[in-house]
Picture 1 (cartoon, helix red, strand yellow):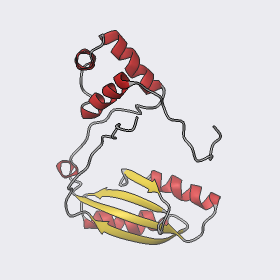
Picture 2 (cartoon, helix red, strand yellow; picture 1 turned 90 degrees about the horizontal axis):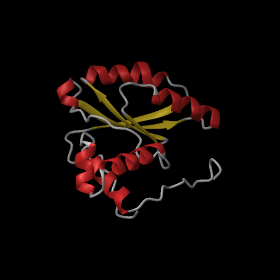
Picture 3 (cartoon, one colour; picture 1 turned 180 degrees about the horizontal axis):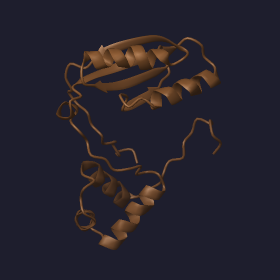
Picture 4 (cartoon, one colour; picture 1 turned 30 degrees about the horizontal axis):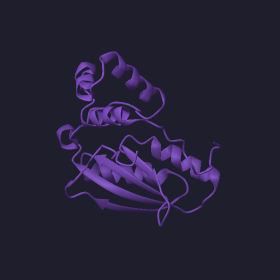
Length: 165
């Protein structure tokens, strides 16, 4: 498949792979033995399947989810960024800059009214102001920045539903 064709290669997997992924999405700290028991296959077969899912790119990594407030980052913002001069070169420069900001744990290149949507996590409004004025505003080709502050989190799931596979 050629890059830019708009279609991504999807991984074909069976019910056992699906069950392994579902279990690992619930808890990646589960032991291989426990995972094998829940799935109903041997531990060596389970480990082989997990390794294949990792090698194929279905499983991209394992992380610990952190409560931002517990690490003094209680201020979260959803920031919409629009470019003022579009070209492939400008777009790549902006992408690299946005991906490099430690205050931005998630950044999406989007279609619609804005070019990017960022999740920004900081300790207070002063840190957010510094982020916008010193970092974000210094990125070339950014024309408009619109911020919505998170008041509370109603849902923040990390699991991807597998009902269609």
